[in-house]
Image (tube, rainbow, N blue to C red):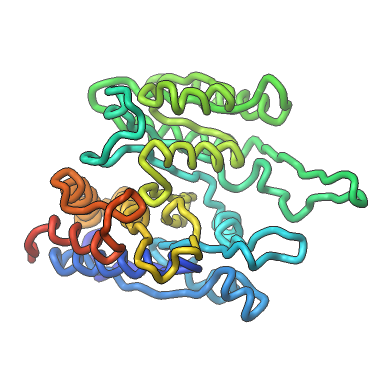
Length: 368
């Protein structure tokens, strides 16, 4: 991105602690820009979420969607409040609408424990956990969520939809991601499904296998039923590399992956399409701790690092690539030396304290 003046980042703070972790994230991103004058970010704050819906009847305004479409990347806090729901009982979740509007078919959930934190699993091999779950994010059991059918008060029916185009896209994404992950060993992509029971997921596996043949020079492919995958997330998670799966399975397994890190507050994510990408922590809006300082901003900060990686890959922009590495390195060092421990993990550090400790580990400005 030679000659770039600035990157336009659309910011959706959302609801509950989403506002708090986003505030800490923007503060830290501004520090990164101060350290390196080649990096310039312009933030545009946009409103969406359950609180907005309660006030206006609209959870994701068309105007906000249009503004986000023009941005270079999108940062998302957390959205939804348990007590605010649509008439049919579903929670207000405009992030799902955003994924579908921008065809963000690849939900990327990295699982890499932070050095210095006590491992969740006692096995010494837990230190080797480093895998990425890629969730197809536009269809599966979520695709027809507004078309659920009720038959009186006796039967409720939802539809699991799988299309060739979506599975090809997300499988191809997973193989390309895997091919760039290792310099010392061959990558492996595991298709997680329930092909032994559901025809839709047998079809998912069939299309995955077709895509795997096109990437056979770069990565190996294998399969695992979702129940076995849940077992092995706990029994031997260090054996996984890249996983690709259906929307609902990915939603569930990504939270299990977050548990391997120590909690949802540590888990980042990116929803990525061909032209747009949204980056957000995996946690929810947690209204019970809103305003207490107990929110853990790490998932949000690591999501920002994912944003920099994506921007660097998309535009060949070295300052973004360096910012991602600097941010992850500062987070790792802050935990390794014991400079920080969020309240969520049994410590005493507030969201602001956590951010301050990471800023301190970034070191002096590098004006270039």
